[in-house]
Image (cartoon, rainbow, N blue to C red; front, side):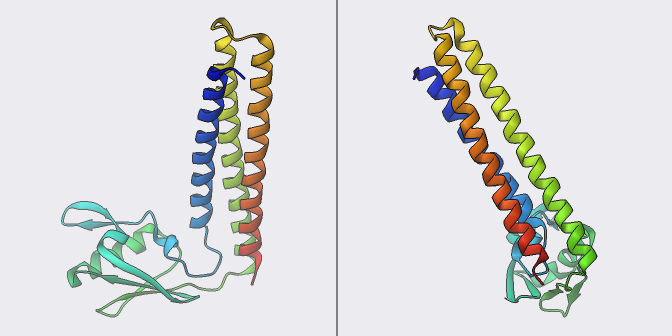
Length: 187
């Protein structure tokens, strides 16, 4: 296979890896009724005038399956952290005892579980769309190689390889989504 086509295939695969990582990260944010430090990813606290990630100003632990403990490194950060968690609207009310902030994750209702499964499916679909767009871009780049001493047969072979890679990544997205759905529906 032509080196130019191999380069396009490697680029497409690298981009698809990034798409899978992003999809996994988004699926992790969907809570399945179990406490996880990942639920607080994306929450930023006003730390002396600059927005700072929660994990940068406090330690986050899960002592049991239903509780998240947020212990700020500076006591004066308790109130800003509490405010940031409430504003993030993650569906959990923080309990501030003056030392740590406790977040008790409520058990999910059947209706809420179904909503979360819909969210999982939407996220998986977004991941698949991203992968298909990467496939389209890779195929366009391969077609543009026609003038650069690349034969029609090599272009067809390259496009077939892109399709194989795409199919494999779509299956990966489906597996991640399936695992997350199972996790959400497990009581």
